[in-house]
Length: 154
Image (tube, rainbow, N blue to C red; front, side, top):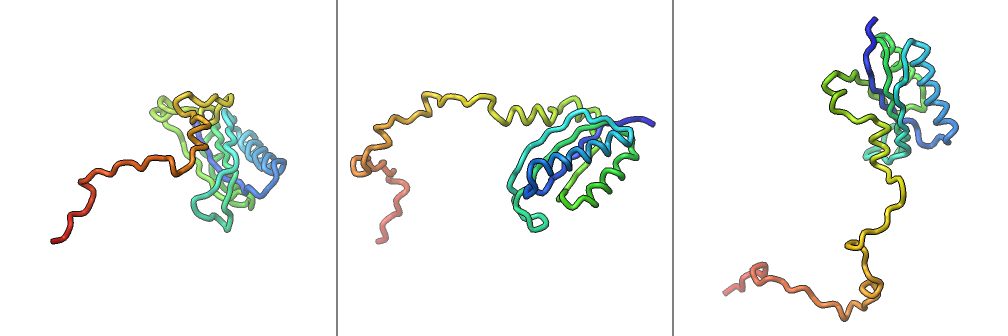
């Protein structure tokens, strides 16, 4: 059969400790390799807060896995996601040729989002200590333009 490139994103319960999260990720990787797939890239995005609750949880551990495999691996993988109680949500997509040409790998995206070294504060953003410690009484009130004032009633 013809192998395609897939990307699977799944969210693990963040209440688990790191060893348990790694065990869940290893189970997913083993399932892919046992069914003839090959994991190309795996990015652990870490614990993130949800916008809304999912299964009465407010946080989740996000993982993005990119792998090659045949089409019959997807139902097996999604069945595993459904049966594993520690996986809250999942999404698996097939990547087409146009998407592959213009995309960034999940691990590279993660590297761009996190700074490699703590950068120094640029001089324009630095605030002198005297400006912070100045009392509020000495600060000037900003001028308000006359156009924003309401017209007096006659």
